[in-house]
Length: 154
View 1 (cartoon, helix red, strand yellow):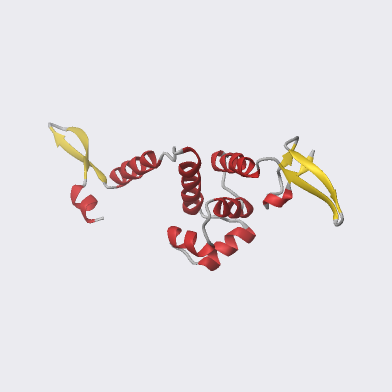
View 2 (cartoon, rainbow, N blue to C red):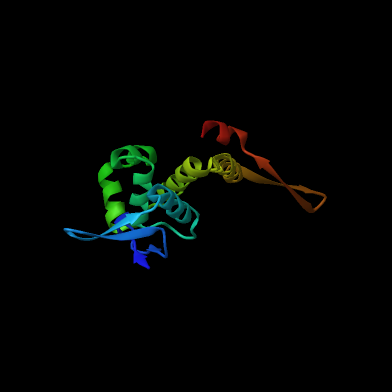
């Protein structure tokens, strides 16, 4: 097996799909279909449980052909923050989620962005709802109402 660290990821091992070649400068490795391998790795990262590491963030950013500055603008931060996340980890949940969606959209066409938007809208409605309690004849009743004024102003 070959430990494929050239991807920038520490946890990738190849069982096959590569050839080792002797060169005047030492041993070299040629990967069969490196683009396909990178797509598989990207999908594994995008679908994994838990937050992504800084190295995984960098791998996905490069796969998406985005600069640190470009992706930083998308997530509302600076390129210095993006650089720090890539070096040290601690990728914010919002950046993690956005990068995963971008990768899934690019590679499968199924980024489930509409599901995420729907989930955000549901959460906002739940945050802006209120419980209205009414007493009649010594008995309380309640109903949940959406606070439309609050939702419209947000």
